[in-house]
Image (cartoon, rainbow, N blue to C red; front, side):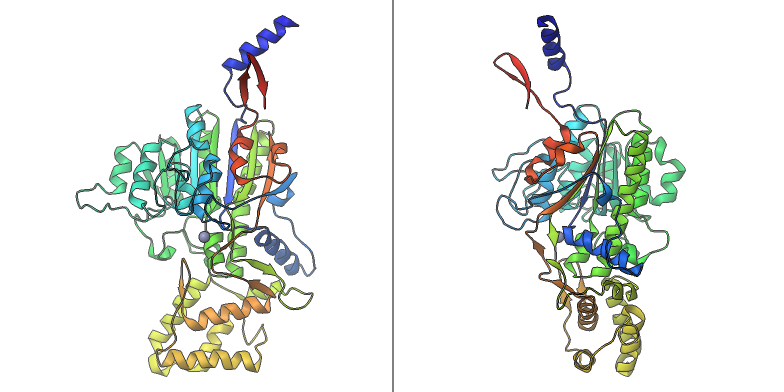
Length: 475
Ligand SMILES: [Zn+2]
């Protein structure tokens, strides 16, 4: 018995510090509160003609719980403080990335696992230097230091990055090397779009997979993101493609791997209080999770999938008047509010002073179902007509949120459609709602029960061997 104990102790001292799973998937739905998930599931059920919920892949996982979301400085976190704590277990103040409230960097789970010999992938549907992905490899005072964040990406030596491009590829000084050259010099190869990845991506050593064109892609929206799923832009990268490429790439390296996949645009659509676009993004995120689940089914004992969010965005409420929801009204929306607004602005530019209210009504009918599929009351019609008159006098100002600027009519019409679906939004910013947690696989049981968002890293890595008074214990 004593010999066995000594053997056990010596083994424990030589094995990796944590007993982490071999393949780790960490999914972060930016802005995806519990209600964003429920909205999507109840919407799908309504499309099936029933009241209830069509379960997504993530909500079928055996472990479902919830975690806190507040930061070190605010009851309501931003994505950089949230990303930092989800990546490193250390809370920080809003706006800061990869440094705690005293300015100290704590090793992130991605850095830790890289040093343990894992291949590492960091993916997002927004720009790869944005707060959530950045939190896994960067350490800067402000999340807006995009050029520095890009340089730190190159220094991370992680194996695979994917998303939209860099927000600030050029430094402040004109002698600064642009980030494409900087990353190439550091050993990364840029792969543009899905076809190029499929052609030769797997053979490469270190990859940064971005959209077809370097820089901000006009078709992708002006904010450095891949297109919204609802906009269905032909040939554009999608989050499921990125996830599938990452699985393909990382599993070909013959090593254990860690990957973080951010559904970054759930948040952006929530900032715009645009429920139909939110649903499209949640479904896209869930399709990416389903790909990880397929991988899990082939390696069930060695794979852990954890799904969570950094915070909720929009203060989404399911219900605004009586005991009903009319979510299926949202299916009348053809595009994201961003695109709808751009198209209405284009219509205005095309017809100038000749643009009639009938044309605007027709536009709202085609793009949001208003007037035809969705009944508009006389009062609501008067409100829209009033905005039309203001627009024709150039007196209707845009409705701006963090990631978009909508013309007044599109914005009001979108609000109206959301109201007709019986949804409420309390804010264009974030809320303090707790975040959902779903898990399956090796160590998934560690995600049972309500916990603080500073515990994700340790719960993913698993029991920690610690020497106390000459005895090795697990805590
Ligand atoms: Zn946000």
